[in-house]
Image (cartoon, rainbow, N blue to C red; front, top):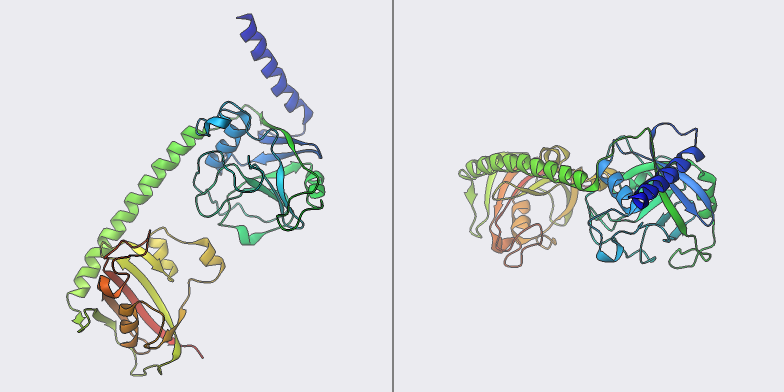
Length: 368
């Protein structure tokens, strides 16, 4: 009992000493990075990004139950390095392998918040290899990097010691690889909770995310079911072509037919027969399915798409045939049987083998 009391006392003293080192910090949750190049402190956005912060805290404190057995019970970040440094861009760490390929043994979803952006130096954000592939790797910006918004989850910012981060950001690195020639080690990563703020555990946060994901799937399923009924009703009045495609003219445009070989501008939305959207360049359509891709927003891709108006166009056969039947201003609903779409192969994981497809198309104009 005395040993337990002593252990509790030591832990309490350690936490108190961390807090006393930074008397000017306001109530909040912080991470102290003690490196061989100096110490800096980040404020964690525990209210805006509870899952990401809970993950970081659990890893730092060594109580994350989802980690690989190799890391269980260990303070994950202690002893790891900033393995990647790119001048005027960012410094990256948190990889147990130290080469950019490591993870803690699991992945968790992105957590994007419109008000949180890569708007300045000192932003703490998750590194990933694509959507919903977060683990333990993170980076800190050395300047504003707005092209990362909607792609990487911002979950904090440096509030003390930005000059240390900046100095690491100017270190000599290997090429290729961007690895510092002189190792930069995180000797300790300590969590500071000023004000005894309640922070959700990673398990609780994951359960909450799973609940929200299920609710989202249910909402989308309702939208898809209603769309399936709508599309089926429309196609009852469609014209069936010898090839097997069906076209219903929702709106007849002009008589002006593009010249073969020209490029035309198209709006499109592609659906499975169950009403589930698989692709579109229309923002309002993707919003209805809660499927807006911020990369496409940033790239201005929710706008008419240029495509070849030609029998040789590199399009699935049914889409090409439907497109060549259109004139400027036409809006059609096009059903493509599977053998004129992606056939037995499908287009995994989006389109299953032997799937009929339905497109809503608008031929907007000709590329000048």
